[in-house]
Amino acid sequence: MLDLDEQPRRSPLNLILGLVALALVAVLGAAAFDRTPPAVRARLGFAPEGTLPTAVADPTPVGVVSADAETGGPAGPPAPGPSPSPPPREDHYWLIRPIGPTGNDWVDYSYPYGSRGDGTLHVHRGVEFVNGDGTPVLATATGRVLYSGDDSAQVFGAHLNYYGQLIILELDRRLDDQPVYVLYGHLSERTVASGDPVEAGQIIGHVGKTGVALGPHLHLEVRVGRNDFRATANPELWLEPYPGKGIVAGVVVGSHGDLVPEVDLEVRRADRPNLAVRARPSYPDHEVQADPYWGENFCFGDLDPGRWILLATRSGYTITTPFTVEAGRTNWLTVPVPWR
Image (cartoon, rainbow, N blue to C red):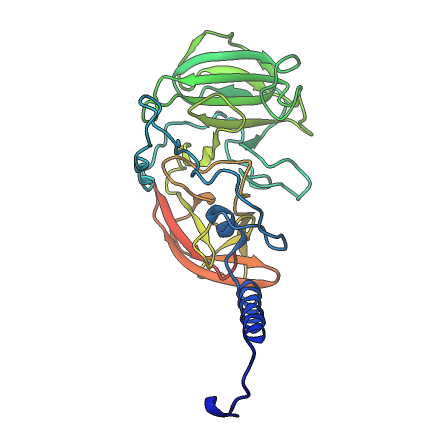
């Protein structure tokens, strides 16, 4: 290698061309080794990978006006937004089981909240109680019937004729001053009318298979804040657990701290690690909401107390996380995984 005083002298034009070439190498090299996740790049305003940056027509940040709306003078600095606060993670078991003791009041776990069932179904926004035609359906809490009818002319779900015969109950209680609604779908018969007051445990209808139901069952849905198909919460975090049972809810967190959607999850007893007790995916990254008091992206209800393990699997790679269930409460679990 030549010393500096031994290098050949270059003309000014060669020096300029060399500096331009070095700048291009630096830019291209930085792009090649940029490992910023796509979601983070989008939040920071970076161009999508594989595209060239375009000129910004208006550099004013979103939500900041370029002049004061009243005086017309220069705008001051934007007011700081509220810092997001973590959910309180408090139990709110406001609902009794919607099926009486003569029927099956267990949640069906083949199509849990936030799942696609066998992978071909709509993302589920509620839970199911599989029972025969005509099984009595009970009001889960005291409230008022907001709607009793069918959905042949008004959409309450994904499309018309989705729930068939349905009832929507608005609870007397509110969550942080937000209304709470419970929807009962696929009924064969309704025994209450819109506007009726109801008490917890009162018979309000009967199980059927109207709408898109493939067989007789009750679809139960909880909506928080507004009566909207996009405002659901997992009913298992609202239903009182069985005596002597507990719930585990938590988050699957990736290598960049983001929630990881649709990871295959299994829970097994610690003393029988080769036997899967229940399976479900973590919630998708859209279409369903976490509970406002928990912020979870998975939930398993009605588990026996004691020591358990959770298996999180993706692409044949499994992460095992131990946890303990205490009866009568929701037990929180964070599952770290190397994926994103």
